[in-house]
Length: 477
Image 1 (spheres, rainbow, N blue to C red):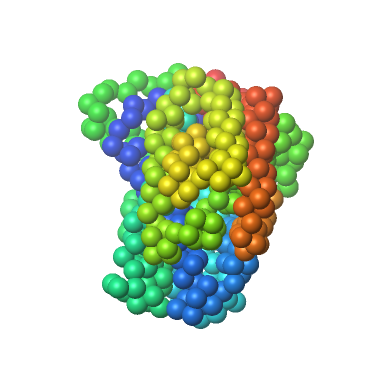
Image 2 (tube, helix red, strand yellow):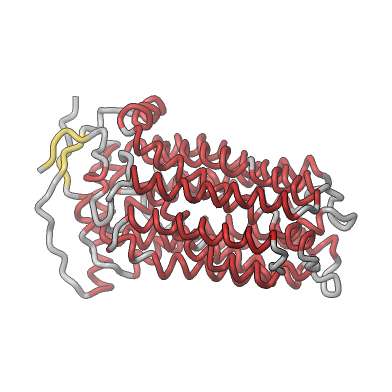
């Protein structure tokens, strides 16, 4: 039986000053959220076209079901690829899942009816779901502890960069004067393929997680990677790096699979599991309810022309990006618990205000967009923090699996229910029923804020190994 490995690799990664190398990690891995945002926005903006003969002649309910297919695929992909990420490594899986997404999105552009469209959307969702597990694990294990919060919030908030791109590019693509309607919506999906191809080459240069390598007995590889990173950071910053005194002992002979993940979630950290499930469900319902059917809401209740739906995405997409960028720093300074709870409660309050204005007939497309820009300024940081939380509060060996389980359950309960529900409510054309669905979203955000106050984990500026000890750890120096 091999002796435990004593290493200081995790603490060497945590003590690194921020350098261009870290930006390469952020760009190469953070692109996942841009792709997802692009996908969701494209489907939202082309939904009115898909319901016409120039599209696929879908009903409003079918557009909602197609959105649900994407989410169900994302949940299944997260579970399958998440388990493989813990077993086979972060890098292998974040290359595989991106390639999977690329192929499925290309197929979506070739859809010929509802069944084919929903099938290809499900497959694309599987790729994105797998990305969440592989990428979130890798990011947290490579980013220094003192910057983990702001980096994760900014990366998850980049979903809205994809939204902005989708909204911007949908304008010419959905303008029948420039591109025939039958072709424009198909070209929109081609944008995701082009973006994924470019990022695939960037990712090939990123390393495997040294933490994962240590836990799987590959200490020499981990040491070589960390030395290379350190040399590059020293060149880029001009700073000499001190060697940390702290070490940790890992016994890689202790193997952990899906059963260990379930045991960790249910027995070892039940309060943490309740916390992250609540955060995921509540933010997923709010976001998926609003954005998967945003185009239909604007065209049905506010008489916005389908070709200009993208214009109304810009303001609250910008609000989301700014929220993540402006507030992210405070998750590392003020702390996780107060910031997450504050963002959830504030977004719920603004959503409540928009419901009141809707019922009074005081909303139009412009004012709704502006109010929601304010709401998502807070909701974006809070939702991003939900992903940050689940990726940092469980042990290394079960991290990707835990992310997958929580993401899948949260998305199925909070996300997959919302699009068809909203699609049906929008189809009635009755503002009171739309307000009812919005009210559910607001109430859930209040619940998320309260649960964070009660169960939140103060993980700011703390090594992952201290937030949740590795299951393979046997001693620490």
